[in-house]
Length: 340
Ligand code: UDP
Ligand code: MG
Image 1 (cartoon, helix red, strand yellow):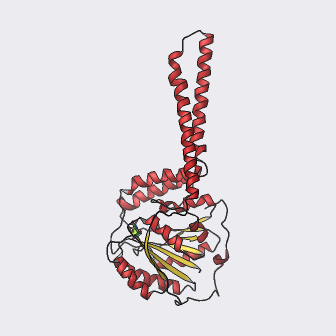
Image 2: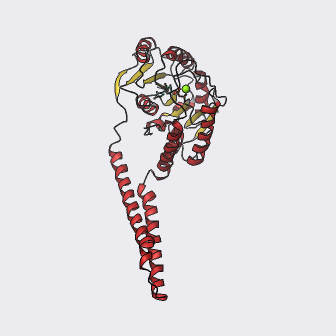
Image 3: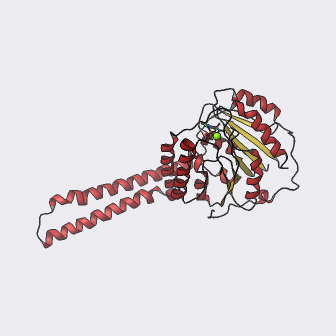
């Protein structure tokens, strides 16, 4: 399997038929062996009924249905889990991304990158409530994570499968995939993609996500710098407190001996408090280690529950053999350490 296209769907009934028609037209023309994985994230409109119908028409379609709305990150995670392609492309279901841009992403990936991120240079959303917050968010995320992208929020992105198979997505962290992936050493590129206004259905996000993005950013920053050892993050601060407490303890002792001053009252804030905080912080670090350790044992448990899966039908129209297959299909290594 060359390519898996993963699409999260939450109440996108009016968009699904033309999305699949446009996408299939592009993919059939690409000479790739592909699959389309639509994850119905607990839609409450007629999306799943329609997907069941479309599943009979589009032979390369897999439909995964969640029991309830788990969120876009969980939907991506389920799509990645089911994907078999050596390359995975993600996109929105709302026709705001143009499937015709997929070959662009693939040819950029072909140059040896591990992630190619779409950049909605001419974004068709409201300025004040969507584009401005997103500009600020992209600047902030780039600064804080050190991974500079113009458009974290664009769903249209292409990944080598080993990148998405090694992510542990939960919460709303899908927005940070390129930054999160740097822990495994990846090369990243950006290409401008088209963007249209949403014609049917409603956006699922508003200004309310701003605070959550900031909190998530703290998590990502923490994960990037300390994912291996919380004891280094908390314990480092703890050691600093212990050292400060000891230094001021020594200073107080010297003062007491040299100028024979009673320093008893200063001991509490200058010595006992820093020591107390130091011990607390080291304990917090140990607790963090325990969490990391047990989550390593527990990683088989995803943060979502599926209701059912409609797999691809056997003997679907095969787009082609491997003749003319681009080079990215044969590139099996994750590139180390750099991004652009
Ligand atoms: N989506 C989802 N689960 C959610 C919210 C959104 O699967 O809880 C899907 C939605 O159907 C769409 C994509 O994620 O395909 C992006 O959502 P939306 O278009 O509302 O976001 P925007 O483009 O406005 O940022
Ligand atoms: Mg959208």
